[in-house]
Length: 336
Image 1 (tube, rainbow, N blue to C red):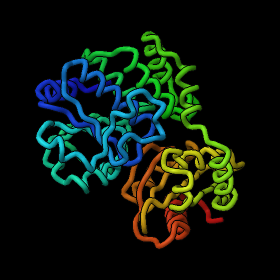
Image 2: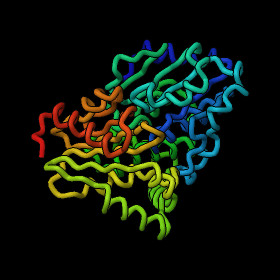
Image 3: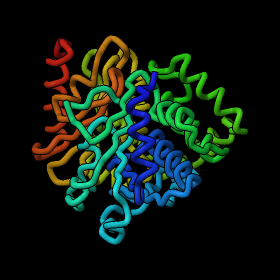
Image 4: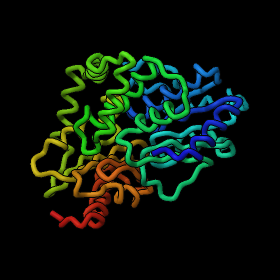
């Protein structure tokens, strides 16, 4: 149930804003893209001036989503300085997910900021207004509830953005977080003439690899995966990422392969993003809470899906070993 007082505050902030900036996280996913585009489009129908910026600009991995090209590079944010007085962060779990944008634009910290998120683990972080609902399987479900509660516009495009996010964060309604609310939200969105089969085909075709890229991915799976008891992990160095290019979202692809290893209950993928800098993705079955592990690396997320960053180790292999040691200690898993 949405807090009526928070909704009133949100409505007032949006109504009285000069302009609104939506920030894309440094590592966007389908749910964050869907959340951002849904609110951007709804507010534009209200006549608001809305901007969408992120460190990656329009991430090529989501080029199949109509409107993805609206996201601009945050390195150019100074060009619109003074044209907005309200900032939105959505579907990130931690302000660390916007780190690169704030590093290049520290003046953003002086602007009133709103958080809309479905990640319950936030390491005590606060913004000026926070609407957080960890019971929502996808952030787009929370956004959908907010749009309906405040009577903001919704059309077929907005409904499709919301459906894309739900599909992404439930993995097509099969993840452990999928519940009756997820199905009900999807059913309600169908009333706006959403075509789930078309969205699914666009997702598959938009994420498809050519033969060379697929061969490289198989090479990574053969050489970079470690299985130790119920834990499996993969390490991906920067050269692997450059070979496949960021648009292929290699860590997500590798993670999906780890999910099919027999006997695995906890898995993580660590990717080198810069010298001595790494991104971590965690997944687990319901008996293990990987958000607790993510918090040890100043990250956060859900019980069965979380993310974080790590600085320091000289190689991605060393980073993976460090993460593994923290993971087994935090989750009480016997070393294998």
